[in-house]
Image 1 (cartoon, rainbow, N blue to C red):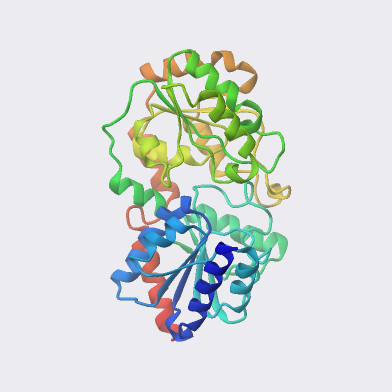
Image 2: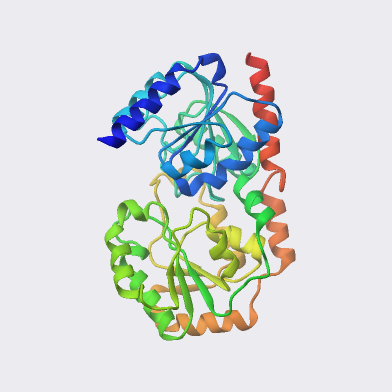
Length: 375
């Protein structure tokens, strides 16, 4: 009840602000996405924009952002439905997929803007209508633009403005990453989340951790934010089994940077964390084959090719989950001799990502110019 009244007060305070002072409203659905938003917000501020508002569901984010810009904490479903329905602003900027279900577009908001929090293709791990209702999409690069245009044509979706701005998060962590604190035998296990009831995290995470700890590896588990919603029982079980082991840790940090810095290897099934690991740290990855991540059964109508499959082909060391007994020896071999080449990772980045090291600045300038045109 206390949370409801606090959220209500925040909603009322947001409503009181003159609508002419709501140029850029950012909706941050999880604290784990904070660093995805930071550079874009700061670059808009650098351009002199003062009418920037952050709406967050997380109390820690509220405390963090209120020292940077106007921020409101709303963490009640009913009040969020109301907020979205009456929203009056020029730009609503989010990484929330599926706009329109459950949160509806407001006729008082001029542009709904989406940007990506992963280097992934748009038509396989996202649902068919994930981006249908946005007005503007800031893509990581031309590969996503082509996919989105194909989806518009194939499914008769509304045509939207698509801008190849680049990947904010990669640029963000590259600026602060320490490449020199790698820990020997440290493995980061970062499984992806999946709508499929059969998935690697639920079915094999305990076996994978046990296998590695038995061979004296240091293991950090970083669940996806969705696992805390969908698989809390497994997380609790992992804690119960391994929390007393000095070689095990559960990464609950907002940023994954510290875990990436320490890891010699990243193990996953389908997580996009491998892109940051290869492109910044140039260290080996292992893909465990179990269940593919397909959240759009019509993906093949857009394209049979994804950036994830190309990346796996270039950098992946694959192991069928049936052969977990081989995992430790594979880790040993990769630690001893298998770092990805700089040339290969650099050419991949150049081919697929726009405005490398300048993505947030590019996007801020685009949004700023767009604002000037409509004012």
